[in-house]
Length: 611
Image (tube, rainbow, N blue to C red; front, top):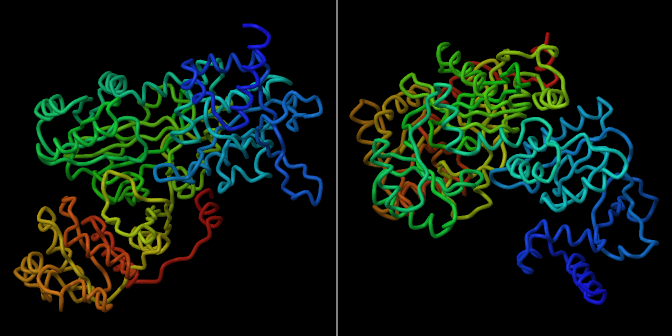
């Protein structure tokens, strides 16, 4: 390459970087590998400058450790980096990036706790995150903050810049959710030290076939399933795993996007056409769906030798509702000691086999007394804040200490944590802000946050959690009940309980006749399709209904149930879309009628637990 060509190329690349082109975009445009673009930039001397964010708006001299990158005037001598690397021991923590469905602010809780722990041990905590709505990006939280996109290029630029004055101890990826975990292997391949669970172990947990081999070797049950690339293979797999219902989902997605429970060949064919059209380069995962199973989440910390289980969370909704949308209770209310012991055993075995150093989240399903493993995620989960507050022990801080070399045994954290209170987590949904969206729960995540209720009994804790999630459960009035055929076996128990609590029961014909045949008084009203006057929709609009119980039939069409559920959202009427939710609501109403709920601060709860 001649001098003139070299100068032109330097000028062109610099202009592209100033305009915001990433190395990936440039590699596509120039038909080169991303690493080739990176090497070319270095050869030409094109590296970013880091400027400080002026948090004082030029009114006073800003001294905040809050930086962003730029490429303006990088060849002028007077242009200086405003980020000066220290010679202290330092660790970089990757944040979780933008908050969205599937990856919420819960991950920022773990990130901030990690920062606090590093600062307490006199290690410089450097954060890379690009979400201004988080605590980790407050200018006074970390020792140093880089407000940059969570992509390989920007992270490597920061690592190289911070390494100019002493080595970085490593990078922590496990607190930033799936966004950060996905960067573990690319960074490792570039020679970066990943602290905590190794990228190889992360791959073993995330790769379906490798993970299945581990479960088989450990003699841990797993629901039958396979990976398919076309409709023909999908139909063959269904036959091999014992027929419908099945759980289908695309690979490499977050928050259960496009995940569905399929009950027939026709539904599967429709799904495969749509899924392959959306993502032809990625396979479809098919699992035997464990119908009527109890789902359980576990958050634990492992140091490679011992395991500390923060909590076994029993989901209130049955398997089939995304774990991020399901309410759950800690400690479990309906699991036998044998089942709990088996969960502890499997968690311990799996954490050690995967060589986890730090946090791990494992999802289980219990059906017919058998404990199945659904998946394991060797990272922080969205339930870490909930578990930590429930047991009064900060899991993310313990995990950070483990990552930097401390042992669980020395800290006194081994085995299953014990709590003194009942804690219920409830999801918070954005349905009021999303006109036309059906508020029914499914395998695809819809929630945008979560709330917690803590008290001395399940009923009181559940009531508090609902109240915190903006769902005020009534203790009297009219309850409308309409459920799908599969749920009608439970309807007499529910109707009887509500009647005993003093509620008037309203229902449409199908459900109403079953309730009436059971000897329970019920007012049967018209369906929406049976007339515009006196139908259920009009009663809701007139404010005559205080609580709605309506389970979906699974049809994608805008059914009667859809309009009832949407009306509940729009008129701010408490609604329940699962049988388990209805039964839990009954317990909550009983608890409220029997006595006042307690009011405790988190500080009180923590001090009481840790006495």
